[in-house]
Structure formats: C-alpha cells, structure tokens
Image (cartoon, rainbow, N blue to C red; front, side, top):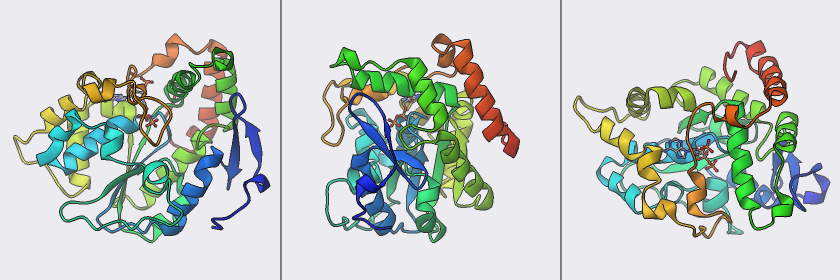
Length: 308
Ligand code: PAP
C-alpha cells in the first residue's frame, strides 16, 4: 500500500462539524489515521508469539485490554490500579505507529508475548495476518449498543462546542450507511468472523454479551486459546472482578479528566455504563427497526445469528 497516497484522491464524507472521514478500500477513517494505518499495514510484522486484540470502536476494547493484560501478565496484573488499560495495551495505529515517520523498531519481549490492540479491519490487514501465526482476539458487540456508546463518546468530544452536538438520528443514519469510524461495522465484524472460522487456532471471536454473561468461563477460554491455561484454583475470579467496570472505573487513573498525549478525550471517557441493551433507553422504534433490518440482511443472511 502506497504510504504517500494523496488523501484528496480518496472518497470523502462529512463527519461532524468541520471534520470529515475518508474512505480507504471500503472503510471510513479519520484522515489523520490513514498514514499510521498504512505504516502498520506495511511495516508491522507480528511475531508468532504476538497477541492482538482487534475491535470495532466502542465494542468493549478497554475491558478486553484489561482482561488480556491480566491473563498474560499474571504477576503484574496489579498494574491496572495505576495505569490506564490503553497505556498498558497500546493501539498499533494510534500509539505505536502514530508519530514516527519511520516505523518503530519493536523489541522482542524478554518474557511473555507482546500485546497490541487495533481497530484496523481484516480487509486492510489481510496480508499481515494471513502470513502470521500470531493470535488474534476479536471482540464485537451488538450494533445498537455499539452505536449508542459511540454517540455518547462523540458527544463528549463535542462537549466544548454545544452547537456541534450530534443527533442520534444522524448518528443512526451514518452508522447504517457505514460512515462511521472504521466502518462499515458489519463489514468489520464479518471480516474477522470469517477469519475465525477459517483459522480457529489463531483467531478467537467473542462477543461483549457472551463475555458479560459468563466472564469466568470466557477468561478461562481466553487463557486456553492464548496457551496459558489456568490451573484449578487460579485467580480467574480475581481477574474478572479487577477488570469489572465497577472496579476499573474506581481507580484514580481511570477517573482522570486528563487526556493522554495520543488522544483528545480524557481517560475517564472510556468508562460509562458497560451494560447490555442500553440502546433501549435512547433509540426510537424507527431507528431500532432500521438497524434490525440491516442486521438481518448483513449477518443473518450469512447464517450468523447475532445482533438483534
Ligand atoms: P474504544 O473503542 O474507544 O477503546 P471501548 O472500550 O471499545 O472504546 O468502548 C467503551 C464501552 O465499553 C463503553 O460502553 P457504554 O458506552 O455502553 O457504557 C464502556 O462503558 C464499556 N466498558 C469500559 N470498560 C468496561 C468494563 N470493564 N466492563 C464492561 N464494559 C466496559
């Protein structure tokens, strides 16, 4: 992929206020992330021992970062008390490959695997992932809660400028048309769902809802998948509790109104309710209907019974 591609040659859509998104190979991105994403695509060579958490935004990334970090670094899981999950598990395109003109030299780990996160769709990462034995955990969430979470998050972004507050109708319309950060949501999910069916030993596909309903079981499954199973009596319950939204959001670092160097929203903006079905408190019947029709068309017609 040409790293110096002229952004003005890409299709463009209005996003919020004066911001716009550009479309790269079918996916909508903030223009400032195009270059870092290309760096990742061109220069990130995963080690076979690398672990990658992949998500569509607002599907539970922060939660899974804390769980995966704890599962892989059992002796230092106390670090979650003082460090934000996004600092412990960096995003490839937003942190690791963000600033540099040259790709960073990623040191091989002295102990344990490297753990990274990304929102990059499989369709853009296919070459990288198909030629690697690294482990991928893909987390998704039902589209209506994902949309509502994104809408809250973006409006927090716009808090300084109330004229730019984003209506839920416009958010729904953009989401359904795929014009969303890293969207279309459906193509993102399907890309990794199909990959997980093709390469189950390398790609584990989980949903926010099944994890929240039985976190103990899923932490054990993740340990097995990552090659570090838990022994009887091991600290699974402790990990589940320490990564719950109640405990995580109570730490000063996660309550902080300060923003990280790599992002314009405060650390506390990644924690809100963390519940299933919050969309019922916000979306009109009409919006629900529109999304459900799309979900049936995109997911259920493929036999993937999820999202309604
Ligand atoms: P990101 O993609 O910008 O990193 P991400 O972490 O995926 O965001 O999504 C944030 C959502 O996860 C929020 O959902 P809500 O708006 O519906 O509440 C947030 O509350 C939720 N979340 C964060 N931490 C946890 C957790 N420990 N357990 C459950 N949900 C969580």
